[in-house]
Image 1: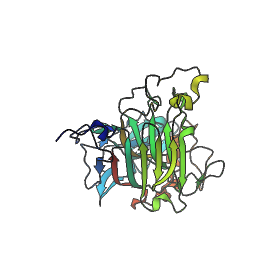
Image 2: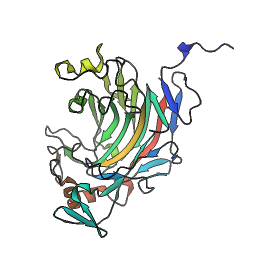
Image 3: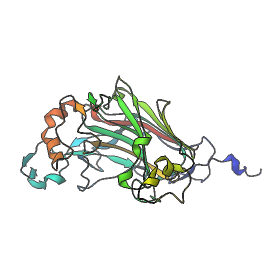
Length: 340
């Protein structure tokens, strides 16, 4: 039998430790994990060090923070220590001394396929149940494997789903931004200061809480467009114009060069990306000081001691996590990727 014509193959390109070929049929399943076990050959637990100060957790490689149970991956926040005393700029825990700006009171997890699977173009779907609890920040996202156009955000970022665990959280316009809402976002721009995510940001609401059940979050990534879906409802579509994302961002008026001049029309979203799942806590960017939260917000984003303020205000947020139940856990039922 003659070889199939090349037109029969998908434009999807992928690399992976379990892939045995480099060409795929359109619609072919090329990656799947239903979390009957936690395959650490696939999922890299990415610990962070204490230099990561924008959020209030440390990501660990501990089984306490990421494990499989009853066919679901659990990403679980735990306390570094339940009791801490602060004095001036120093915090004392377990007899050790820490500077306030290096203290991270929560442990959690980030898992990625950075070393095991990446792809260009395709359909990716997560089925997940977000956590419930103030200042919890779950995310399902993709990052570039090689950053071919430069450091963030020049090489792009694809946020398939982000949410906030607060029950009653609104922005300055009264819009719901808590657990009744999820968002999808592209980050891109010729410099960090020109991250133009606001042009490619979408939200979807569910007044019965996204934490009350599992929902599906999907990205259809093609050369001509990127489309987001929540429970099979399209929430947003980005189709770059003839001049690509450079034209979409109207960067010609800025004193910067085009980092995507040698890329395709969909650059920076024309390179291989890998999968990430994580549960962050708080931070000084994702929870705006202009938000209104039932019970208040125990820290200021501009404070040099934001993490300590968060921890000292734990009587506000700790009861909302409903410990020791798994309501504060980020649960992932499956992850699947198909060729386009």
